[in-house]
Image 1 (cartoon, chains in turn red, purple):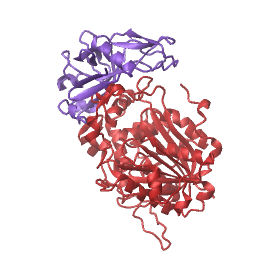
Image 2 (spheres, rainbow over the protein chains, first blue to last red; image 1 turned 90 degrees about the horizontal axis):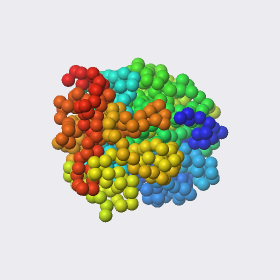
Image 3 (cartoon, helix red, strand yellow; image 1 turned 180 degrees about the horizontal axis):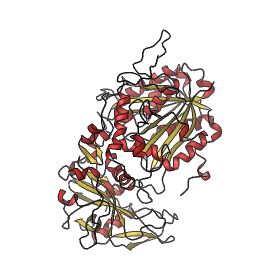
Image 4 (cartoon, chains in turn orange, green; image 1 turned 45 degrees about the horizontal axis):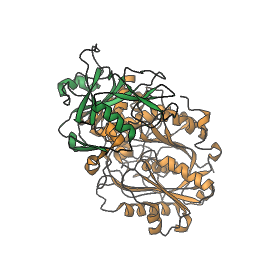
Length: 422
Length: 176
């Protein structure tokens, strides 16, 4: 099924370059926050407002999402003294960040509000575990869920495994090739003081770690953490009044799906080794007016090593079927041709359902990544670009970034951002 | 009355209003694998849905389908998530291409049916059987009868079918 002109409605290309991310905020990425999701969210939104140089009266829109634990926009707005002209708390996971940025652009463009704070607050380790263990695993199994949960087919890894294995079958992708994703992201995390896991791993470390669910080893799977994150979106002209250079939004794709999504995700149509990026890329690049070859830094959802590989491939950063070769070529490492997840992403920094990869790319475009490089007397980072352990993770001349969000093989979201040209 | 059964310590419920799943599992309890055939499209679909994915048509009949097919892909779970499966690892989750309607209406489409790999007596397949099964293995359906009005479809190796010389297995298995 060709995704072509008739799907041209997710973004309007004439909004290209009109909106920007002007503020980003995080809590620490940790296990055992000992804080409520409400408290975590107030910190993340408050930190993003500080980053944007904004007061409570500057924010009048709020969006959040969750597929497990969270809190509600009106509570956070009230806690921070914000009066809202628009808010919405939606259901969803890893395909939400970019999609909600698109919604924020839409509601501002519709005149419903001026500036939107998007947050995700979760105790993904200490309350509702993202891996699906604990209370979630024993809840009653109702109706459609019988077709998978009654078969011991429940966690994200279990649900995605047939897709990953079929890619290995169709294209000869090897565990060692895909393990290179963990190697790259752990290298990046070792230069990120905020990362939960800062240790560098080798391919051998990954393939020798215990099998969780073939083809996934323990180290192919992301980390579970407690954290909140926030992104503030506004018109570019307003963003230019903020302290940091705006990350200018060129295009967004929200929850673009393969045909016939169902309770088993995407098996009926096939090929099952193809993911939603195959469809999303046509909207993403056309609306941005650039191609994959123009992108300097990617942020590809790494719930698992395989999800990054599949997305980079189906978005066209390499030829179909060559994802294994691409991710193991060094291209996705700092110092490579197109580094991916320079903060360490979900595999190493922390799990946020996609937010931290957008935050990281915003920092890359600001040329202000919070690594361990020294600052000059004006407080500006003096980046070394050497990428030795414990050092720099700023990409030299980062001008164009792509974020690739993943709900599951059948649904994804994406966004392209650019450095401000002013 | 909703169908409510306990299976391996898990509580499974099919509400009365969930007409499609109720009918599907009731047929399974009679030992019949039936799928909805859309009245307009004439095409079978899985899992049960309220409307035909090709036409949106809500009219259908339950067509008797032969439970035979080929493993399209699988998962092999070593770390259990649900308490019920703690004693079952390793176990396989199968995505099976049904012979019926394979490659229709378009090349890569198939009725891809889920289930576990079990023995001919319906027990979870032991490691020595799992090791012989992979993409390409021919399988047939059997039913795990839980109560008079509920059975769960499962898959077992089709010993009467011609099997591939060597089904595709996850590469590290060669080293085991």
